[in-house]
Length: 405
Image (tube, rainbow, N blue to C red):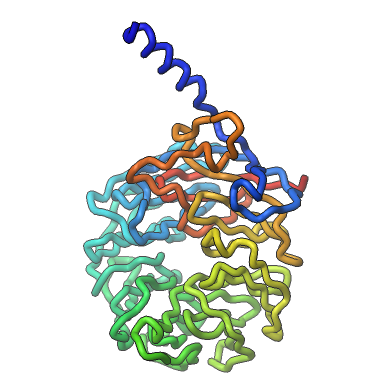
């Protein structure tokens, strides 16, 4: 009897495994999620598994898109090139060492940093390594670049410049590190004459591109408090630029608009460790309490505040068309209006094999977390001409299409 029942039960379990519904609309009271008025149609165009994923490790490996090709790195050491339209693999290479920072690149070259403290330059056409150079420490954010050099910020407070032709270090600038800091950095913002970066001291510095010496600095936060935790003032987000104005924000500090000559146009309260996003004349930020805040780009005045996602621990915001997107630690992608911050869409993004449909249960309940599997989304979303790229902590890369309903 036992031998007869086991196949039947196994078949029933397989039959219960269903594909994930494209738009998650579980009742807010049951799921614990904020209610919303759905105004979007969200579809998954394709999804590919890149490897183990970052899981609990601190990595934010956002993909890169160049000429309709997606370049994505998995922490295991795999770097892949995929067709943006259908996700088909073009090439794949294994660096043989874990990757710590997302891929960046242009003009036929890709750059990626590894946990052993090396910067690797690869050919974008086939993934073959061109050169590698030793860094002073780990890099956890993508490199910035111009036609001649690549600029890397490392967790020891340094920004270093390397020649793109051969990987030779051109200069390195060191900023003093506090006793305790948030583990993270942003990508250096490369301008005509300066390389702009935020540091754990709460300062934004502009470094001379040719010499690597400081030209100006703006303080966004001052360490204050009895404990080292209270004194954290890191600038971990990548500065944003629009119309020659730089926007940056600090943890336990301010969000600010800075001119290219180092003058503050405005500063407003806004504690965050994420990067600002720009759109419709606003600066958007996910604050450290989970609030999503919009500031007027010209005056810094608060335009709207979205508090409904605070319990979801939303990540960095990304603009896409007229929407503002953020993913959370449970694997949900939230869609907001850029105009007023209203929640207008949501989808649950988790690996398909882990989904089992139980009767009379919400979609969130049906997803059973497996031991050692992180089903959240930590990496920044990437908006493209074909949709939005999402890289999950479980190692899946997805292309999402969003349309007005």
